[in-house]
Amino acid sequence: MDAEALAARNYPELARQLSRAQAERREDDEVFEVENLLEDAVAARASDLHLDPREIGWMLRMRIDGAIVNVLPVDAGPGLRLINQLKTMAGLDPVATLRPEEGRFSYRLDEIDLDVRLTLVPCLNGEKLAIRVLRPMGTWHTLDDLGFPQTETDILENWLDAPVGMLLVTGPTGVGKTTTLYTLLHHMRYSSRHIVTLEDPVEYDIDGINQIAVNNQVGLSFAEGTRSLLRLDPDCLMVGEIRDQVSARAAGDVAATGRTLMGSLHSRDAVAAITVMRKFGLDDVEIASNQEIVVSQRLVRRLCPHCRESTPIGAVDRRYLERLDRAQPETVWHAPGCAACSGLGYLGRTAVFEAWSLGVEDHGLILEGAPEQALRKHLANRGHASLLDNGLRMAAEGVTTLGELRQAGLGMRGQ
Ligand SMILES: [Zn+2]
Image 1 (tube, protein in one colour):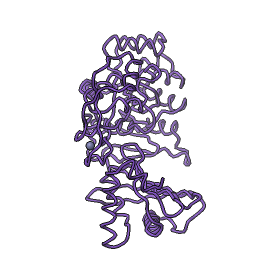
Image 2 (cartoon, helix red, strand yellow):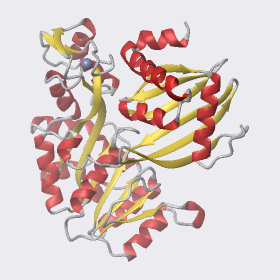
Image 3 (cartoon, helix red, strand yellow):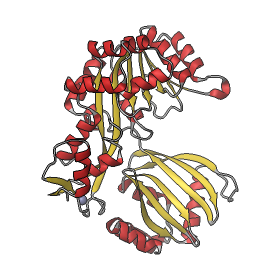
Image 4 (cartoon, helix red, strand yellow):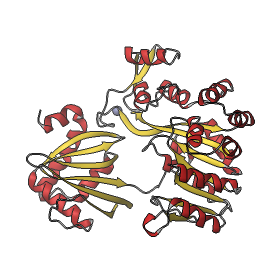
């Protein structure tokens, strides 16, 4: 099937909207400009653009709400001009090279400063260009904006009011852990606390906070970085990702000095963070005496509010709920697609959260070396809302679908 037909089949409304925009521009100046491309990307809520070489010309793909969408074929002439224009803006040599190249530039569009990052990779048919469009942190400044439910917001606000010990944000890569950490930092900076961050790399500038980038080339490793940071005498330290024994050890040592520590971690859910910290060499006493809050999160697409409707539950959803031993509703939410959501049925993304505030009994169980399953059972008994509980509630409310929860891996392997 040719790419145009494929795009039309997958996303007819998006393809129509963009074809129309392109056709209008061709009449104007016959050039597919960078500005138009970035405008389309922002209008379509795309985080990444891909120009994939074909036998002749390129295929423009966009990542919208986390899913790749075939958008439009771009002819050889305009495609090459576009790539050269982008390379020049990013300070790269327009001559095609045999090695992958990276560059970036900032671009002001409608009073918003976009951070545009290019990666060029030579392929069989020509150069492949991946473009990441980063918007400033702008409006994501409250826990509510991120999608934290009331109970979880209360847990975090209580902690922010008098932060102690260690707060970890957990989940797989690309689910917005950094955004959550930054949002918490934003809240914290209004306090009189001295906050320092050690990041790899520094992703967003925040006024009023000292941010330091890890730089292994000049000897500023994670462990070395945390040691120098302690000399700055901070009340709170944010360390980005805890990914191995060295960084876990450094984090544990910081917390042991009575300072507040925030960081992210890869783990399936909140409770699994304890297992990961044990694997990284922290003992149960250290974990029990320092661990205060574990947030776990996943990203799901948000159902389009303009075309969502309730339909009888299908076999796949039925089996999913059966396997989880959860109640089966008669109907579920579904969105067929409309002009507002470019026919995708989804509009934007939101996070599913779990926030575990460790109580005396939880600390006691950790000290006794209780395994993950025992902790999880104890939490369920005391009415703690798990990642899955919150996800199922959002699906029942029509915020997202059960299919999105499955995509995000919720309810898999005993979570
Ligand atoms: Zn819609």
